[in-house]
Amino acid sequence: MSASGLHVERRFTTPGVHPYDQVRWEQRTASISNEKGEIVFEQKDCEVPAFWSQMATNVVVSKYFRGPQGTPRREVSVRQVISRVVDTITGWGRKGGYFRTDADAEAFSDELCHLILHQKMSFNSPVWFNIGVPGSRNQASACFINSVDDSMESILTLAKTEGMLFKYGSGTGTNLSAIRSSEEQLAGGGTASGPVSFMKGFDAFAGVIKSGGTTRRAAKMVILNADHPDIESFITCKVTEERKAWALIDAGYDASFTGEAYASVFFQNSNNSVRVTDEFMRAVEEDRDWHLRAVTDPSRILHTVKARYLLRLMAESAWQCGDPGVQYDTTINDWHTSSNSGRINASNPCFPGETRVHTTVGLLPIASLYRRMADGEDIRVYTHRATAEKPEAGVVATRPVAVMQTGVKPLVRLLFSNGQELRCTPNHRFWTTNRGWVAAEDIVGEDRVLLNDTPTPATDASWALPVKVEALATSWNRGGTKVHQAVPERWSTALGELTGHLIGDGCLTEDQAIWVYGGDDVSDGVADRHA
Image (cartoon, rainbow, N blue to C red; front, side, top):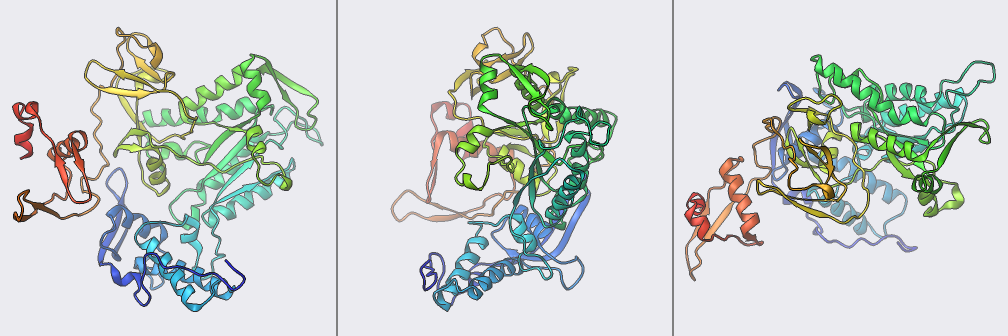
């Protein structure tokens, strides 16, 4: 950007040709059902690009179309949604003098429209919730970090602030370490409630305030320093509530993400993290004591525990329910790029990950699982009951847990008697029927690793293929015939086998797919099945 304004070079668009005119549009019904097959959202006659998947249609229509359903104010086309955002942002740019010429403003608008329309980029949810909506505050940021002081006024102000941010579709993060512990006195006598008690109130507000006015729940991060006197109850608070939910599920209550079981317990709307320093980690390495200090007088030690005990408690709790995570306070502030503005005490959660997990919709990368859950899908993860506190047979599908990136580590390769192979870190634990939990590096030939012994179909998965394609088969002979191939629109066992063979013994280019077959494939009938 120069003093005379921003010049925008066209990469995907042509002057005078609107991106909307370069794609085919069609009318669809957007519909979302719960795990019982009951329709929880439906909007008919929605205009969407023909190449969009039904999943994309359902998400955008249910979450990002604005206006009350059944009224003229309701958006009915993806064109309206994209134009509302793009035109508003471009208008702000024109008004602020950002563009060098009107042609640059038009180029910016067309290019941004193309990127969104063709799913090459997408804004965060608050942009779609708020930008260009009449009467909206045009709040576009997804994440806010809020502070709190050790006073009732500040605590209640935080509840109001978070509620308003949730209303407009944003998430929040707060370090509650400034709130005195449940073992410290109040000025007027009596004992303080402590941060974990106030967390119940914050969690309740987050649970009832729908993010951006949609069915998406609010999202928040709660942090407590490792030397806070209430750190032990903070670490285990979600485990306790998770066990209550399990008891309700066993009693027959709905186990879905939005069902009665999880709606009846606390701390389901936040990710919890413990803030640890280099000093704490060194104490863990050296097996030293760790002091828990009064908030009102840090020189006063209320309790002393082993640092390793606390870290072990974190690990066991995270194994059971996914929380708490760990934030490395010293490293975060050492790498602070604007330290003059003050230290960093909290963050908003991120969940990267490509690891696939076994869910009710099939095998999903954790990152995809998190995104789809955030968009309102009810997806559950299968866990074997043999690993529970009271071991049982079979598996149970429960809601997903948090994902943490732990760094780059060496891998080992395990080969099993059934021909399967698995790569994992040496300390990855496996449940064996003869020795219980065993690290990968300690597994021996006599160990019996427990596999899923209960049928677990992808009960909520869609058999429809995500995209519709046309195939053209061409003879290898020069001048050979070209034949249009009928391509299935739904998954099947045969299609899955054919695709798997292509991945394992074939190659795929922009122009062709090649399957390679050997003598074994002919003798066992694979080649004939694929012919």
